[in-house]
Length: 308
Image (cartoon, rainbow, N blue to C red; front, side, top):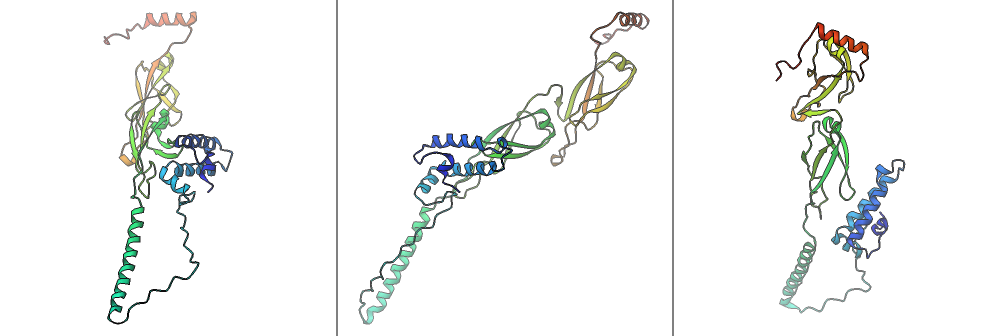
């Protein structure tokens, strides 16, 4: 990997705010969604993310500046001291009964130095820290929320997250994705990601639970004589048989054409409820008016009778 300062286009004296601003510009410029025709865009986007992950942490950045770690975060091997001359000979030891005492003192010094070095190395290693939790708001169309399916979102910082939405998400719903938050430090676990759902209203569909509601206009002849009409559903257009003598406000049911079943929660598929609304032509010619007058005289009826 290249030098992270070069990747983000900042100097080594740049502030954390300057580094963050440079990262946002680079992530937006190299994001794969905006460079679909460039096969190298993903590699550059990942390189930008890796550079920012290293430089946004002051501790990691300091270690990199001191040459302790590489651009990818892996430690650099410490140079071993090179002996330019042989070590001096040990001092002469007394003879006789004191030989064992010198041997014991040498061993004690050796083990003391060994454990002192191990304690120093242990004190240098920081404890693992869990990553921070993040929150993201996802705006869904009516169809996306009802049908579910894959959805890609971009977290704060430019990292992408691929979700698989369950069918039947409601507006205002919040759910948690374990270990999808920010990376932990020093080997610590990732945080969690909390997703807040916002559902945009539909032009003519409404939802009640797992059922989809739809109001469909029909003509006077269709309501009186019966007809077969085409109505939209979340799953595509469907032919619906309208029985004869149907009045306004009658609701017909399309079985299984609502929100799909959710097997993981043992929820069945909903239905689509179609309410008929009788609509007159925009303009009535005199012949049609005469027909209506004749009809009203021969078969008078009060549609409000018994309703109020």
